[in-house]
Amino acid sequence: MKICLYGAGSKNIAEKYKKEAYELGKEIAKRNHQLVYGGGDTGIMGATSRGVIDNGGKVLGIAPEWMTDYEGLCKDCSRFIHTKTMDDRKTLFLKHSDAFIVAPGGIGTLDEFFEILTLRRLERHDKKIVIFNSHGFYNHLLSMMDFLFNEKVLVDNIYDMFHVANSIDDVFKYLED
Image (cartoon, rainbow, N blue to C red):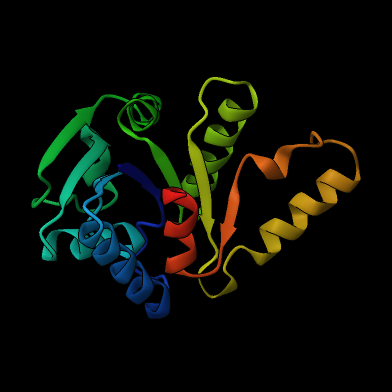
């Protein structure tokens, strides 16, 4: 399975998230899945890709040519695709992936999550989406989504479109079921 990871590129994210991201990458490789991601070599993205690469897995990085102005890019990817825009990048994430993991991240990660969720809602794909709620990272986001649901601005079946996993085992139980 080709699994797209959305996650922070920030060097400043807490070590506990990076450690768990590395373990997630190890598990992706161990289960013979391929990582598809934004190509970064820092933060959650870098930790996950290192976990995959260090354990013999394959990694596809996808990033705009100008992204090096903001963060380092992984030089050890099995394959790297340079794009012109972030929109091109997100289109290729969808094209090259069978499922999505939303790991701890910032505004870029949230943008990617809400776009892929919206596309699922609009029936542009039926791929699995899992929020990896590492150390409760997304608890506040999930509360906000509950509020939106209770205020009737989200459709009744929104929670059927993604899964919340609090452990790596739960991530793969959902993806591989």
